Image (cartoon, rainbow, N blue to C red):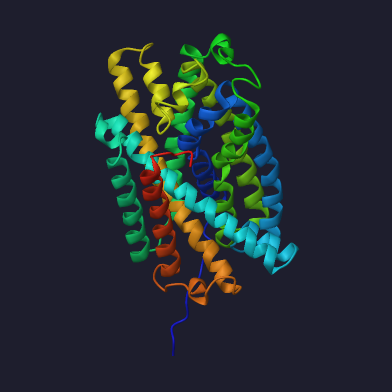
Length: 369
């Protein structure tokens, strides 16, 4: 007789789900801040705050939907149940692109934080950042093909480090860097930034909150989803919105707009939080500045590694849902007995995200692409 597949277990309680939600959503700040600042300039805090408030409202809908439909698939499942399979299919493919972008950006920005922490400039330059990014994706893929992940266990550690890092930057930045003059310097709505750049920055800012979808995919593994999910989602995203806007305020104060650009979206594009620490270095003792850079750099690398890992897991959960409803080949809906993921989905996520990283590097190292 064939052995029964154990399936997913409801093991996530409120603290574990909060940690996963906070860690996954807040991690996006490590790459989204620089990209948004390159276009929104002095309006970066307001753009990120506006996107955050929008996602805070959306999280209420997610919380209600996941409580009513505690199964994987996230928004693709909600849309399929609310409308039809065609709209669910289109939503699912749009979410696949979100996951792939987060995997590519997280892995590509990781060596820049690592290079800042260790003082290895080669890691912050092409082609070594691309080499490290591809290696990271391949390593995550190999581990996920070999064993089942324990997101809720690692999530507590990563979320704690992430929260401590961002609070530290906000406190030190508010005391040493934040200035009303710096925030408004070089800012002229419609000119710097232009209306086109500001309109482009708004959807980019939503990159900072794509982790919401990953959390929704955990509904099937949550204890008492009707109560746990709403509380965890709303509290985690609410905290992320406040800290994201605060860190952005510190960042623009540290690197005010000059001649229509800010170093936060130029020199420090691929490691914006390390750039903030570098600016703090002028106001604190050298030994403390070096310790802060090592701490923030290593924490950023760890947080981005976790973000890439959970995004690959989110990709596989979505693929499992679509495969089970014949919106992908049936092999994507079949789970491995040991790892409880589809090997085809993991390989597909790794292959396409590596293609994005390498392709972007060949085009001209244009991260905004």
